[in-house]
Image (cartoon, rainbow, N blue to C red):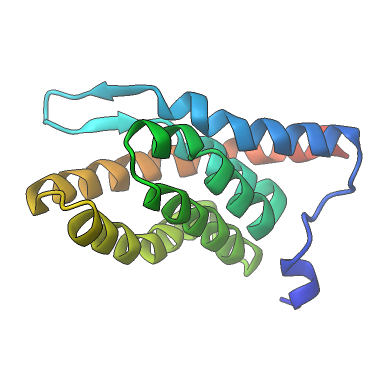
Length: 164
């Protein structure tokens, strides 16, 4: 993959593509306000769908923009500014791995693998969250990342066709 391709959105820049990207930058803020508790003790998060869709459709640049801008509300609400960088890393690295030819699911899981050290270090040392909480969060994010990566992958084709 050339660096030029990595640093582009991968679509023609026009009103449709800019509108779609802006929506995918704002959508995680709305989806981040939603979560469902499960009987197994973890919460189903929804925000990753838009980050993954932006990363798959617009590459690393779309992923990082959606991850960062889409986390503003959650970072403010939880007074945790580290969420901004963590989700930006998730979007950036997912888009990078997807552009490198990995599948939707593998790209998202590799991207999450890049995000995990940041999440653990900042949540444990900076936010002083208990390890048990972080472990539960990692489990919840892993499971929901799988779900949303698959669904975002299924949505990427129709979005790309719409943008052409």
